[in-house]
Image 1 (cartoon, rainbow, N blue to C red):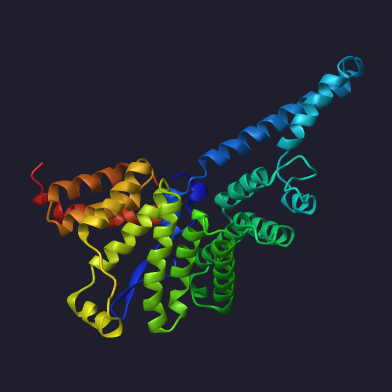
Image 2 (cartoon, rainbow, N blue to C red):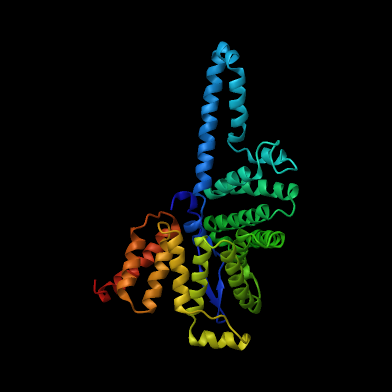
Length: 352
């Protein structure tokens, strides 16, 4: 995927025999599956229109006669273009009207698209600006689930971005504070609208990220809660490939537990989490179906599933498909390196 999404990582680990989705949860997932292209195209067109209007304004100022002759027409152009000016996020927040528009002209949906594009661009400045905007919106639009889950996401991305730049900050008070705020905002989003799939998705992602800071038994309980959040996200937004991939990762981790780990889990809970290889593969294949061209990590995990089945032909096929995909982020390169190692180790077992 493009560099705009290359700022995440993902790891899954086991604590006392139970799956815990770890401190980078959702990072690669989001990187590979974020559906921001439509929104980014909107922003591109908006800015293009704004530039054209600016050129027209300059030309008209040089030709007052033309300005006078077509004053009404130009006024209409600028009225339409007023909704297409480049984002100035903080001032936008200050101008939000009670009706959800900005000066009665720019609805929240447009502002959300701008914020989403800014978060997808990543980088500390963009993320901080988006976070400040969303904090302002949370005051002017209290109880708005769309604001809350984006605020949760912005806190999460700030923590993730800081962790990528400064790995030594893992577990620091600043990291914990950002994740705590992210979790609180995600819970508020779900509480505000239990029909919002994005709210449940980000609650699952963030819940997984904070488990490492919890006592062991709470970590285990979180494994159940994470799955429920993912399933709610899929129920509400069945075409979101990220949620299906998250479910696949959860199932794969549970399926991969050793006998010893399962015994430990069963001593702590009467019914420890379970998953089959078939439902694991179904989730990954659904994610692939919904997002076929941007799923390097999905290909890697499908290859691992076929390795479990000892179907080396399919395994090698998925590894090669993933290696042929474009990806330049740190996590794409890491996944591809693992693919190369698996291919080197198992391609001789394939018959085609």
